[in-house]
Image 1 (cartoon, rainbow, N blue to C red):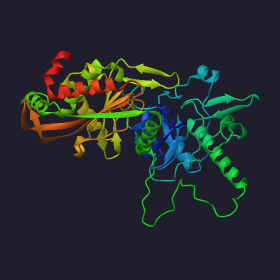
Image 2: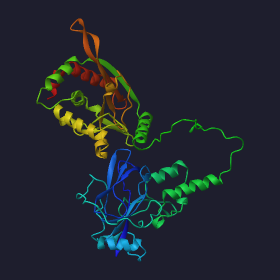
Image 3: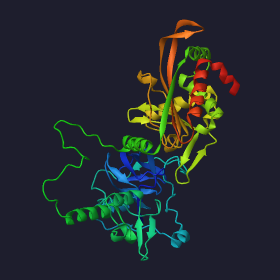
Image 4: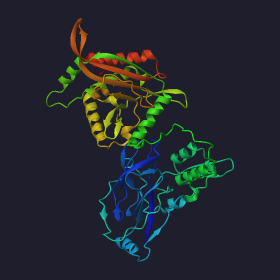
Length: 466
């Protein structure tokens, strides 16, 4: 007898609480192997394929493409141990062949440890044990698979455990994800007063939303005409509204948080980049690996951070401490069809110019294809922003929270410049440097930017750091 297992959207890490379904990779009635990807989702970080830890036959899917799914909500149900005849008989009314059964937990799960209990892995690239096998359709055209029940979050052994708190009256409050707590907090709800409809009294998102509706019905209507709150304008005919969710929503939240928390300041300087362009042309001889201008600027950044390590830092607001970081994980801004992303080059201080160029090219290609992993978009310590590709000279960018500094590079253009005492036409670039004023004062920031400008004007200075 087969056992139906429910697979929910697992904890995606990095504080992510929901994801948007991009496309399904399996159909109802298909056989899936353990750790085979079943759905592609877009998080606030990147698009990822989610593997199912159970092997068997897919009996239901929850949600269509474009639907937002919170962590803990069901994605698919899988009949573990089912055979084609089992499903066919069940679909045609030949009697129940699949016995729905919740997964074991606690000591029973440890003692049983059945082979069909699943791998426990969650995301591709995060501990998946082996590559998934090829899937095959086992149900030809015919009756539909068992109807899917409403997609409400449920606690299973396939996802992270719920957060359980206990109040002064010793009554436990079980919440599956930070999203539920956030919604309750925004509406002033006490989770202890809500009765969960999930397994073991688990408080679901639908429970909180129902409580919000009930609270709204109980509140008396305001006397007189309602006054606009300013949070939402009246619809205008022909206007277009774009939801702030996914990558765009995550960027908006990060920009807002940076402006709220970081007292940033910006300084800038013009530099003669003629010699830097000449050095790049000399490096790109036929047959040698190509070196990009961005990679040269990245190498200049790592050299400057070696001289001014206090800028490769972050602020621990809870401990009220400046945390100086040992490695330079260099982020660089990349514009894609999905919006602005910041891929991160790990341990940039240990890479040569050729290695930096190759890695940046790889990450840029992956970013445009939407294939960057969350790890490739996280934990940067310093950002290089080349807004010159947009044809502009200067900018005062917003810091990439929680980083403490960012170097901005404008376009390189031919301009009149005094060179060796005479007026000449040179290739000039404007460099801007935005920094968290809590980690350093203006002298340190100015020294960093001046060193960068000197290396741009005289690339031979980089030889001192080799």
